[in-house]
Image 1: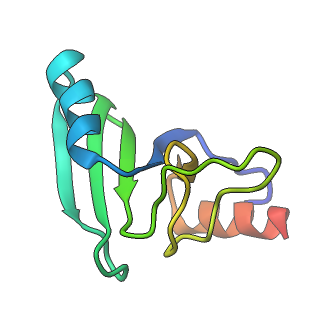
Image 2: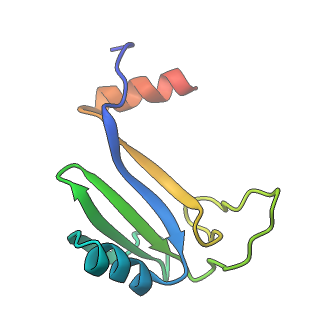
Image 3: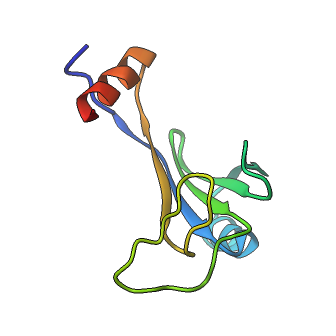
Length: 111
C-alpha cells in the first residue's frame, strides 16, 4: 500500500573497535541481555552483536577488522555495509515493517 511506513526501529548498529568493551558496558553495567553474537553474514572477520533494549528493539555493534579509532572532523566516516567504519559511527539502522509489501512501498517512496 502506498501509505505504509515503518512502525519503529528494530536496531541501530554502531561501529566499534572493541566488541568486548561494548558488551561489558551494555550487558554487565546496564544489565541488558545479550541476544546474539555472531560472525557477520558475508563480511569476513566482522562480528555482529545485539543487545536487547525491549522485545522488539535492539542496539547492535559491528566490529569490522578495518574499523579504526581515527576521527577526521568534517568528513563522512562510513564505508558501506561491508567495509570498515570509524569507531562510534552509525553503521546502519534497521526499521520494523510488517510485510514485504511494506518494504517495497518504503523502497519505492524513497526512490
